[in-house]
Image (cartoon, rainbow, N blue to C red; front, side, top):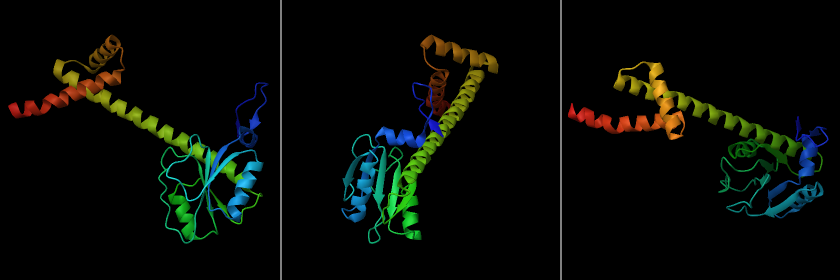
Length: 211
């Protein structure tokens, strides 16, 4: 994959882009040999590294990547900073046990790194984690847009049905009424549909009571 074409038109690899970007990395790892080795390797790669232990409730601003240690004798981590908008995550585990791997999956890790920490394979793990996180975000955005589009289609059909019933008109005329109102009020057709649906729902119970 290539990203960010340079001004001279030459494409640059994702790995080169990452190395030249100066990633802002947070390392959540005990202050031991593995933690020091990890932060040292990351700093030699040119990244801006901040290390914390125990993990804080909030991360610093504008973090590009998080390394999070999973410890054998610790409870399953539930970090307060984790959520849909949290940065890409690499779990650091002592060995490949089912318990560690399951914890990493539950945390939404984009990659897993095993100890003892070595320079070999670290860059590949970082690149794959960032690429996986990017694809996950893109997929989530596409799903959200599709859901919004489907909701808009349902609202349009419902609003047209209300106008057709109220005014005894056809579907095309109902849509033209919606479009004209949207243009007059300088809002979207979906906004007009929402207003009509809400108004109808407001008065519908009163009609049933009166009947």
